[in-house]
Length: 109
Length: 113
Image 1 (cartoon, one colour):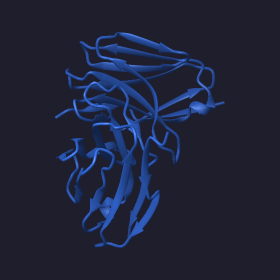
Image 2: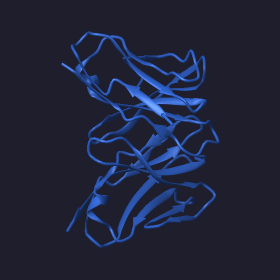
Image 3: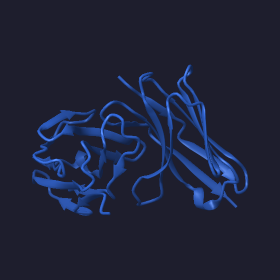
């Protein structure tokens, strides 16, 4: 079956760049997503990338997609304490999203 | 815009009780789905629907039923609640296979004692 894998934890210092990695298995995925979840809150869509793109940049966020290796990454430039959250990678199957287990990003000042 | 509305936000059930988690969307989306979120497990797909009258099972369907009598509503029923169903439940909708964004409700925190 389809699977999305992420590392579970990442710790960075304020002002550094954060890179969260994700691998997926379904080569037919049309879209790949990054969601952010703060404690006790719902899911916030950060950005998404279409499967025929290699890169997408949106302010402090850069998404890189290596379709050959089925590898997706999210880079957050100038990481702030407000970026501390759980980040989920997700791939879109035809009918629903398949999520990774989430990466907890901890930002220290 | 209401988007995706889930009710209730919080619920405590006793083992063996039944209840229905409500989900409604006002965006005329074809696709709707239910997820449960457990610590360290991410979001797992319970059931999904590709249109009124059409539902199918996701990764963890056991203990849950769904129906889709209208485009707007996609209720999730727990027939006989078990402590293992203690979780946070999210409902989502999207326009269809070409839809780029899934819209999520704010979640229902369910505790089964």
